Length: 373
Ligand SMILES: [Zn+2]
Image (cartoon, rainbow, N blue to C red; front, side, top):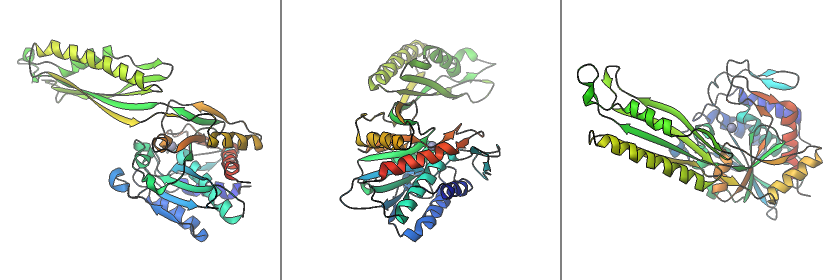
């Protein structure tokens, strides 16, 4: 039903608009111009004050009838780096970049699908569920757009985020994520004259890092020590070192248990060095990045997507993920949101691709999910 040629053209145009995180305005301008002829109501929320983006999240309303249910469709406008001057190359079965940049299929494939669906429904008089298209900013820098979205602008109770790999995957379950930073405050001293007066925060950090289990701790739990920075000069016993870590789990209790165990270990180490010098200190700061999602399999939106896939001779199955997406924040705000793949592959790399067959299939599936007969 959708116009594949037009959707591909939209995609190719979108990826050629630079939109690294916080610089999404040109993409929003393109979208508004593209759908201007349908005279659909739209709004920007005020999230830019909090996200630091040029613009707020864009919400476009495509209503059919007040009697119908309303569904959120969502994808994000921003890309990761290097995302400037993208030159899409059309191959037989896929689109790729010239490998000097990413492609930006993450998430402009989702945007192109949403636009195509809005345009198709606007042109054909097919009954459909009311659509609230929530086009977000700053997804790639901690889901900031979705985090600060003004949810009062949405009345949907279900949603589809289009921001994953293959449309045979429907993400219905995902972990919570916490960032935590351990700061070791050692004692600075001259490394050549009186090193014995110092306590090296780097050496103590090594002790701490050795105690923290990383990688896949359980089937549904991962921990990563992602960044470490410390020291001020080569000839100074380092005074301060920061260890930045992330933990993800489908089970909240496990996150608490692991973090408590780490805290206990830190206290022991702190006690040991405080005996040598009272100025020694270890602190730990935790920040919730997103909450887990777990949408029940009998949920209306899942049932509709599976049925729509079947209609298109395709098999879409509910799956779990280890990652997070804007969907996590929609769920937190009471909208049962799943994440459907769009055909993107190897995203966040210069080898990023969009598999055309899957791209078209994803659009047909979402379209049929929304058709209301
Ligand atoms: Zn994405």
